[in-house]
Length: 172
Image (cartoon, rainbow, N blue to C red; front, top):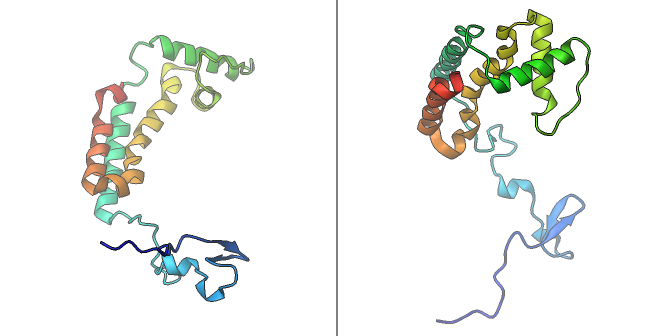
């Protein structure tokens, strides 16, 4: 086996010079543009490796979101409030009535309290309106596997969305 003494040329060796990737500063012919690495660029077909779901797949995800939303909204105000919900509701109510928000590191960030206070403003102060933002975001969580589809595939994405939609711990 013969070992070559010359270094193999790596197209990534170089640097940016005036908006072009240049391997050697004096060699203009060795400059590389983005089209060398991304031949589909400029042909109207560049997708960053993310394929859009078909109409049937969109319909499936839309029906999963509607089912998840219906399951999360059913009897939303009828269950007992547990400890964390009571704290979130209390601090959001204090914000709603004009008491402001004083961050406590033991509590969640302010987005949760602002969303609950907004729900109180729109729908009145009740257990239903206190839980509504979490129910809406929980139903929207079903769409997150679409982002992971390039990594986990179509079947993995659909299976994950189904599990998120029907998970008992995410429904209550």
